[in-house]
Length: 453
Image 1 (cartoon, rainbow, N blue to C red):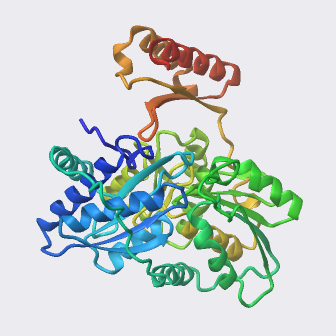
Image 2 (spheres, rainbow, N blue to C red):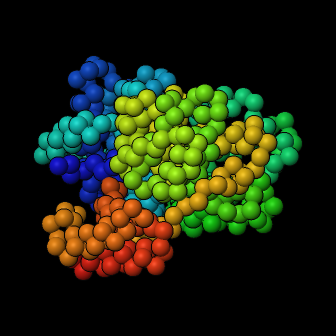
Image 3 (cartoon, helix red, strand yellow):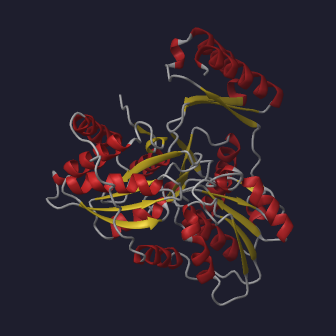
């Protein structure tokens, strides 16, 4: 059982285990030693989001890596998918992102990518974790010095922007006003320049919001956690579309021209139909997750497209995509993966490809997803003190069983622990909204009673 890695790297409160200085140094040392098994002089590229703690973690991690025999290049504040792209493109032995994605500023995290640009498989993370615990017995951050992060290579950001623009060579914003919410996160370092270059010939207008990070305002009442914010701004600006990212910009959500939020399920529908129309949707298959709405499955089926479900987490979506040959996969939360174009969810790439699809179709975003009729769905997050198997708790197991029996074919029950937070997520989907809310509240209360903080 893994003790450090969750579904998206190592995450916690900055300064506290596992993100205290001693453990972070051991993570760097363990990763360097692991990489040296296949490369005598491993090169690592590192990027981060805008949290107050990111510079300190980067410096300590770099000290651990270099003491273990690795060399480190820093891309500075940059998005998670940019590091995945740069790792693969330039043959780095590994890529590291210091970010806690959508979590509040107090949290931070360490995500790892292999030389192919893919997130590491669970077995590799377990092996690194074992190495970390071995080093924790002896390693420590030298008390007499403050580690220094390597200098930032600004060319990395420019190269990533060129890659993004090359993915949509025919895209024009002519006549369109777009609102872009950077969540005061990593997108703040990329999106303004990206969209300025996209609109370099004029004809369109891009309104950039929440792009002034101060170390503490990442994800705060903005970004993909609060898509209603960009949706309201679309209405105020009389814009054609709104785009909003999370803290590390590996996912994107949208708002259509009427100010209606367009989530990852709707993006999957739009993208799947476009790829199918162009003969690029391999086996007419899309990979979603257990959290995707039944309405998406029904809409795809009407277009002759089958939907497979993977476990929650874009790395698990990608694993199923690779095993089935699927060209498209993603999550309701906005992680969208275009196989062959990206090795992880990429919010900026997704934004450009959605803009391109809308541009080529001659329709609005709202028109392209208008037939997606979602089942009522509710997610209740319960903060827990431990992640005990739910089936081993009779009251919780009984509540889940009662919901599954009553909803049968007219709904879905998905209960899971978060892989990045101490939460249990209760998701109920049903044709009947009263039944949906009743069972969600009943299950959540049972979990709260048994495991709540």
